[in-house]
Length: 186
Figure 1 (cartoon, rainbow, N blue to C red):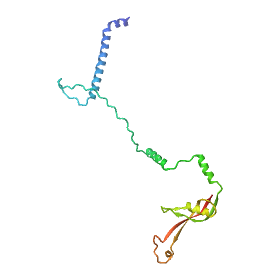
Figure 2: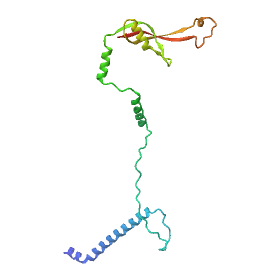
Figure 3: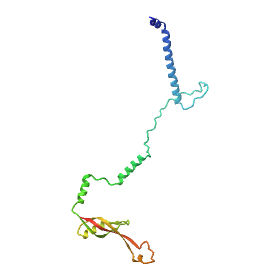
Figure 4: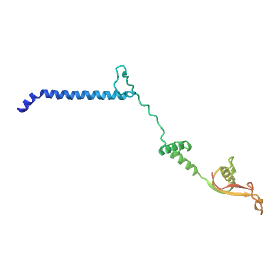
């Protein structure tokens, strides 16, 4: 019964508590709104009391969207390795399929003969020896159509003057010659 009497005596207190809570919530929300609008202004707040003529009308807030993310290049090791692989794709010949590789091997396994001899390699335009022509000449001398060089010998051919005592060797006294000594002919 005591609870019932207390409830009848304290309704005014209960209403007062509810009013205080509501008032505190209202003050808090207004304070947060004021802080939010104060942060959005670009001019620093003036200290002191301002007259109504000096107050500035609130400006509408403009929302600035962040710029679209620009894809930046990552200068890390993984990125550099990726670039290397991309470049090597264009520099290397394409890989052959297993059937193409098998056909190449079967073409090599056709009846062929290995021959020995000596055929000179011609000098290409860049100064390097071109031994494909030498292998073909060696095979043609044995009655075959063409060939691939297997073994190459290199020799230095010098002028007889080089062997004389007291002769200083010059840059054109000797030259290097290459020969195909073994080839597979078809």
